[in-house]
Length: 186
Image 1: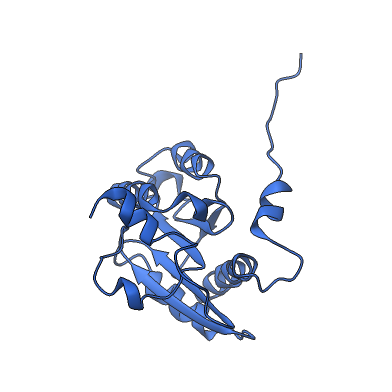
Image 2: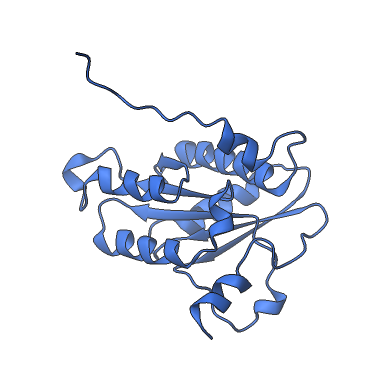
């Protein structure tokens, strides 16, 4: 199967949505806490059915693709202190259909505040988020309170991308997003 057909299969428009259901896909390396985040997401009370799927990389395997639900929101989780995590995230982001980068994906960066642990310059990571025009959330998945806070933020983004926030669409959020640039004064 070629790259284009794999991407088309994982397009946000390739499957019909399930009634009153939202599905989140967490993409991240093993051992970084994505399963804890999935459990925390599923513990939150919602007025709809929430499904959380996990994978270590994209593209998803071709087998069982017909039984796979429509993915409403994709979360890339990368560890700023792990080169392999960063490179796998970069490779996986290239495999996602471009339509997901219109309000249906975000990047979660772990260990973003520990400058001494960084394997990459944070400007490279923010550049990755900017290149895909997707939000970046810095998080700590080890502790329960910050993990719950992140889960609530992800749930809010998922509700918008799934159409559960009436009158708000991913395109509206994208159109009203502010880009801040600091300019030198003369």
